[in-house]
Image (cartoon, rainbow, N blue to C red; front, side):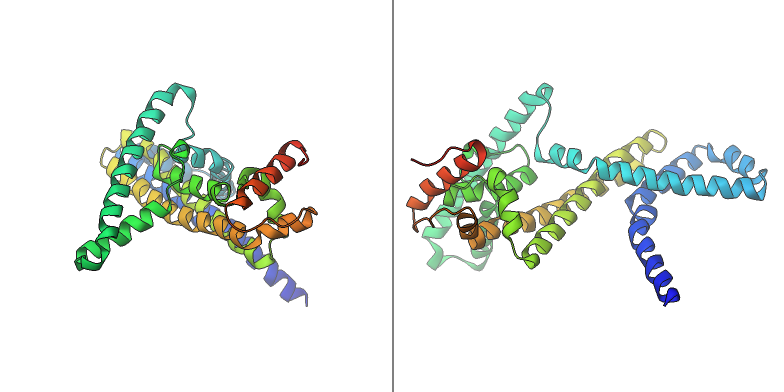
Length: 294
């Protein structure tokens, strides 16, 4: 029994700490080590380490492992900051850039919507290539907020904003207000799927953050800048996929389980159709400010 206990404990420790030791943090420091070695900075350090006693070398190895864990832990703590950066939630000093990029996205979305409508009207006579273009446009426009006032300066921000605002457009429910209550009413399977999707999104965002930091090593070895850029582009595209899944699951949660929210709060179920938005807006107002409907 005890052997089984220690085996399970060891596997749990490995599961928890392996990502810190073998994840992108180790790749970041490994790239840095290559850059420093190319500049000849590691030779004297390696010679100094070889002159230490066995105990001292063991302690130094433990310090290196601890450094890897601490750096990875710090990056995990910063994951929401990285996500806000990729969403376009930038400081006031970058307001001009934010607004310019948002206008650029608005213009691009308007062109894509116009092209989509043209193709949709001629759908019966489209060529195979045009049908593929129509499918791509339909997928891209699916992750665009319905209200241009909600546009963000980045594609990732628009995807996530679509998931956040979809319930307000369709049902009058403010996701930021209602989400904590709805989460408690979701079936375990739905909560698990949402948690996994959010975890994947944050992992991809942290991976992008490591890629951004790896640009530091380009000061020591210029070609590493290209590797860092490829790293960031790859991580960002992975984040886009994860964000799409996460946004879809948020929208599905409101589509399927919003009536549980009304029932749990003792409110009458809303009528179907456009009138439901009025009910949803009143419920959101009640949850946020405690304002009872008249």
